Image 1 (spheres, rainbow, N blue to C red):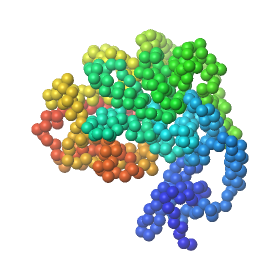
Image 2: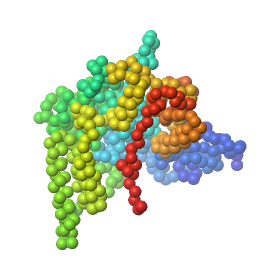
Image 3: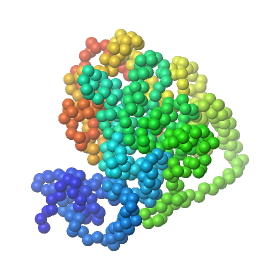
Image 4: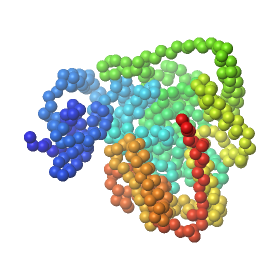
Length: 562
């Protein structure tokens, strides 16, 4: 039988999986064709032979497929007055509660909701369905997603994979370089946030600052203009805020709340996502609801079930079902089991009671000082004592040694709030920067020379060669690809040094990825991961005398079984 050729984008039938698939790549090797295909049913990309693919038209439908088509037709008929386009135009098959959320969200002209499904029910998918629906109806064009730093890449991957929506991730460190790159160009856009219609950024990277130790008023104003003011003024149609409960803040003066309030005013459509919107404090929850409608929630007394209900879309795990009407999650039963101390447990009992007293005292002190992170660590210590005597002994010994050591220096920061630590890169980097500026003779107030030194990173340290490492976008989520490129970077650096070449693995040089992509001729189907500056080191250059100090392995390596 003659081989049937398929093109990229064709839908066909994968016989080995008995499933439809879509061709994303064709490879012709030694006269034979092979394909990489995407399986929607498994949300996976696999490689297959040409003989394992067949046209969809040649496949007779199964009873299940006929029933599915019939059900879909009934649903289409029921929704003909308010047809949902997003589920049809997306690769994801929504669950009933996700369809409910979508239908309810678009049922009003004023789309400002809190998506509060419990963890694991797919709030990201619901938000993607809403934004896709609004785009298909021509109601939105410019979309901003604000998420915690650790979830940014996940948002990017899910929007692209499930909805075909590409979001540009803007690193805050790109902003100054972009402005300098654009300076002097007449008529060019100088607001990076306006350069892309669909943008994602990390929450703590764009919140406004009132002050920062060592910064002048000019530096502070520049920071807020680039990260906060330009973002707010970029004319968004839809703003999506993930983990929105972080926006409530302890007061209206908290930076995160100011960011949320400004974003709420900057966009007609707003989606807040949080599995735990109420943190036990009515005032914080009130401020969160004020982001949706300030007039509806003027004070704490207005926060009641009836008034909140129109703004909240929530599904609990116990009420969630699949397409067949079966529960998504098995019910969980929790029982308390009392354990009586015996005589042989006397030493363990005394240890438990002593640790409990210590934890209680430390926790109360931490709460009084509003140091919740310390309180959390004390709770972990309580768990250790119930888990392993050896584990709690090691922890307590380290704690005692730390308390007995003299403090090497006073605190560098006025505030010990966790929010203020979000963007710090570590004391080691600060120490290296201090050493560099010292050996280079750059004074603390020499802004021009300090800026020039920072810009060297964007210029690849003026190295004659720069290697840009990329990976195929089809490999997203790219955890294993990033691991492989990390190993490759390590090998390249070692090989370079073996041959007398100096090299620097540099992330700063790719922050302006669009510029790098243009000048290096990198196609759009490749993601830029990292770059390596390479050349013969100048031994007379004083900056090369600075050496970084590595963390002692004993501080982060645990040996088991030796």
